[in-house]
Image (cartoon, rainbow, N blue to C red; front, side, top):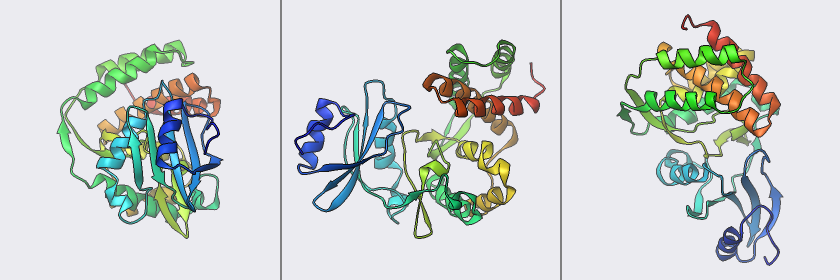
Length: 285
């Protein structure tokens, strides 16, 4: 592999050549919205995935931590890609290729059985040892306010109401567990009827209910049977009312502001809709 690999820095290319000297790029799975390059490589008749972050990346470190600390419940049964090599300084991760087709946009996205498996899979991740954190809510509150201070297209009056509401919240202790951070069909693979998980760039220690946020704003809205199946697979429902409502508003703010920053208008509109719906349930300022 002597040719340049598009999307990788010189140091990242040197590392990949050292790890897989005869590798060839066979597919580029990058989204193009953020500075993360995702390449499928073939070397010695085996396939690998390389993820590389640019100088502005804040996700590869989370991905590395997830692989080394939290993914054993999934990799032990082949339900997540197995890590091969990592280099935090170079923002580079290499895993074994996990076969399957993305669930998003396929018939599997509308099947309750997919969500039952996804719920069961998520419970395995969350059931690992957690800990109590007295500062999580305060940190989350500050992050929401930073999003509101950043460029966005949230109406001024709505933004003012959101600021006042966020500042009014209590900050009780939280129980944190390993979470995926973006749990939805675009990060699930289906292979032979079995659901697996990919993409751990948002993995972190958070309350368990945070991993229900994307589905609650998207797939669950269109078909209650999907939510029922997911809840059955998970074995319960961690969405405690007050903390869950605070999280819904934080997620709505972040979705609208982040999507505006990266130019994803469809996702931005989803964020604005999430804000409207979340505020409809609030009597706050």
